[in-house]
Amino acid sequence: MTQAVVTADPNEVIPGSHGHEHDTNTGVSNAKLAIWLFLSSEALFFGAFISTYFLYRGRDAQFLKGPIPDKLLNIPFTSVTSFILLMSSLTMVLALAAIQRGDHRRLRIWLLATCLFGATFVGGRVYEITHLYSQGLHLGTNMFGTTFFVLTGLHGAHVTVGIIWLLLVWNRSMQGRLGTDKAEGVEIAGLYWHFVDVVWIFIFTAIYLIPTH
Amino acid sequence: MTESTDLVTLSDETPATGEDASGGAVVPAGDQHPVPAHGDADHPGPRQYVLIAVVLVILTGVEVAVSYLEGHINSNVIVVVLAVMAAIKFFLVAAWYMHMKQDSSLFRRMFVGGIILACFVYGVVLFFFSSTVLKS
Image (cartoon, rainbow over all chains, first blue to last red):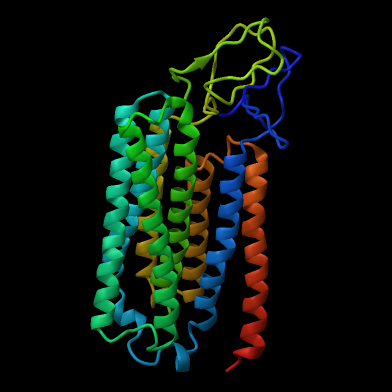
C-alpha cells in the first residue's frame, strides 16, 4: 500500500515527483525503483550477448563454417513477428491506461491481446529455430549458430516469462483482486514487457538487418 | 490519465502523515481539489499511444527496406542508418510507452546509467578483443 504525502505548503510542488510522492527515502515507489534497477541490469545482460555476436560476426573461419545466415534467415517472416511484438507493446500500454481509468473489462481484453501477440512471437521463434535445425545449423555448428541460438533463445525465454507474468495479472483481475489502486502492479509488468520489446529492436537489427559482409 | 475515475480528496483535517488508501498522490495541505491517485496525471492518452505505434511500424518498414539495399549502397551507410533507426525506436518506446518522460528522473537516470555503462563496457571489450585476442 502506498501513501499520500501531505506537504505543509499548499502550493509546494516536489521536483520530479509529478505530484505523486511516495513515503520512501527516495520519494518514489520502491517497486518501480526495483524494476528500473532490474531493467538496467538486464541491459548489461543482453549487451553481453549482443556484443559477443558482433565480436564473432564477419570472422569467416569461425563464424561462417557451415550454413551461413544470409541463406538461412527469413527476413520477411521475422519482420512480421517483430511487427507483432511491437503491437504487443501498444496493447500493453493500452491495458495500463485502462486500469488507470478504472476500466477493468478493457484491461483484461488488452492484457489477453498482449499475451496472444507475445505467444505468436514466441511461436514464430520456435518455428524459426526448428527450421534452422532442419537446415543443419545447430548450437555447435559455428559461431553464428552459438551466438544466434543463445541470444534469441534468452530473449524468447524473457518473452515467455513476460507472458506468464501478464497471465497472472489477468487472473488476478478476473478474480477481482486487482483494484484500480493496484495499477502500479500492471505498470511494473508493462515496464518489463516494453523492455523485452526494446531488446528485440536491437536483436532484430543486429542479426537480421545489418549485412553480414 | 486525466479521466481517471479514482480520485483522492484530502482536506485541512487530513493528518500530516495521512495515508491514502488509493495510493501515491501528493496533496498539499488545505487543497480541496481531487487529484488523480495513480501517478498517471501526465501520461499520454490512447490516441498518442496509437500514434507512436504507427511511427514504430513505419520505422520498422523503412528498416527492412534499407536492409534490402545491400549491394546498391555502401554497407557502412546501411549500418549507420539501421543503428540510428533502432535508436529512435528505442527512444520512442522508452520515452512514451515506459513513461520515462513523465516519471521521476531517478528512474531515467538509473536506466540510462545502465545503458551507458553497457555501451562503455562492451565498447571497450569489442575494441580490444577485435584488435588483439581475435585478430585474424
